[in-house]
Amino acid sequence: MPPACILAVVTATLGLSFGVVFAGSTSQKLEAKPTQILQGDIAELRVSGTGLISVEGRIGKETIRFYPAGREIYSALIGVDLQAKPGLTKILLRATTRNGGHREGQITLNIKPKKFQEESFSVPQEFDQFSPDVLERIRLDQERFARAFTTSVSERLWEAQFIRPAQADISSPFGYRRVINGTPRAPHTGVDLRVPTGTEVLASNRGRIVLVGDFFFSGNSVVIDHGGSLHTMYFHLSEIKVVEGAEVHKGEVIGLSGMTGRVSGPHLHWAARLNGARIDPFELIKKLGGASPGDLHPIVE
Image 1 (cartoon, rainbow, N blue to C red):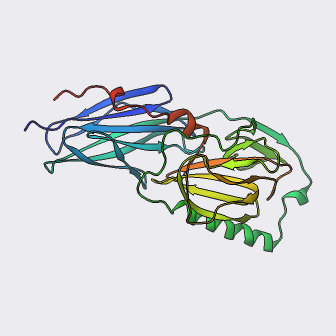
Image 2: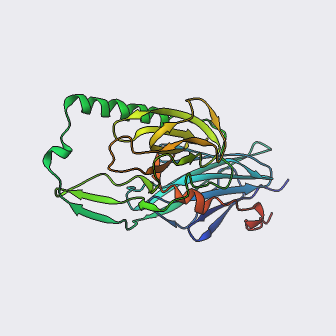
Image 3: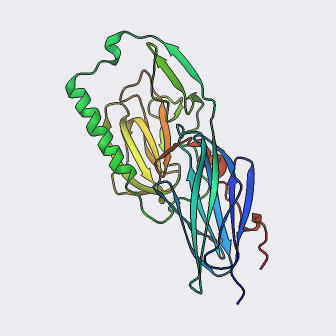
């Protein structure tokens, strides 16, 4: 039996960015030239090869989960945090073939800075001063969200394509920066959709409810685990219609929009995390249209 060949491709902003073929002995390692990806963006990584039965990946301390995407083809999603440090980062790959052979390789991503909108303004000092009780509540809220983001089933629950949770214009974009009283604040980690109170909010894809609650900043909130460490969030709801542990389907009503939490008007805050990276949720709609295995370059044995 000839040695297995393994092709790795990354589908990023401009489509199929590059391909890498791994072949030969089990000790061989090969690295491709870097491919560019912007802060807050996602890409789909696909690996294929004769007799391929599994693929593992790592980026930093995070595990990248691969899923079958066709005959002897495996795919995974990777995300870059909106505040990721620009520069080179490596994805380590390890593939296993049916005859017990292993192939290792790495893909280098070139993280590029992205220009986000920014505004500066001043507010009374008391606007940003919280009592010890409020600070303790915020700390407990953060702990609950952190636990939810580490809760994810290994299998992929989502199905291409993701949908908007509400049909509305964007009132505040992803990554929006504010400088208040001369001090830069945390960037906007989601997208605000301009909807009136009482608008039905839909699950953007199939998943499992891992967090429901009323929080200081986000108000009535829902977090959905879509599998493989991919989560979406829905904040400031006036009413929640799901419970923790429930399975939901794409398009199912999970709540009604509102203005709960620390907000100045009704809207829906929609956000997403992938392996802990804060990504633009609209990237899920733009990039996950469902490329077919036939889009891969042919593999030469």
